[in-house]
Image 1 (tube, rainbow, N blue to C red):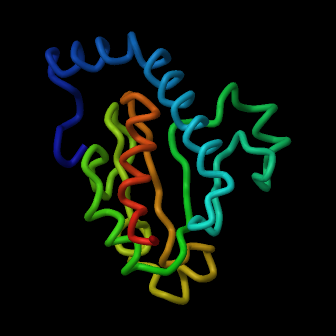
Image 2: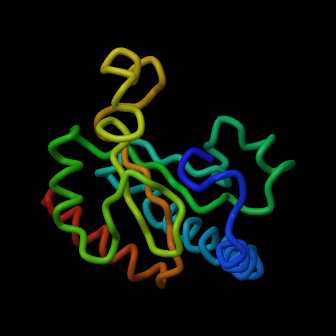
Length: 159
């Protein structure tokens, strides 16, 4: 409210309503893409851990099955190495945008240790289970194979 006031302008409210009309379609498509990407990378030797809600390896899988239709639009990967390797991967991405925000119709990637969880400090991140090699990918509406190809190309740093 500090930046926009107590209420939206009529135009902004109309824009928001227009976007809400297709929200389910977009989230369903993005969730389908995220599942394809999670399945593709589940056995990748350069990924130490892959976290995606609809994967049976998720610590709260049974609860997720009860509460969610799909696994959502965000997946988390912990890659071999640390911050240096993550930044090398990020520098090789062409399709996926680097951002400290998540949730868009285009794919966005972030490094929690230097963005969203930076203020926790190294010890706080360790307690929260956020290693320096962690990447969060907010999957967009692009073709899932294009997203995978972009990540595969970026992971050539391991070869």
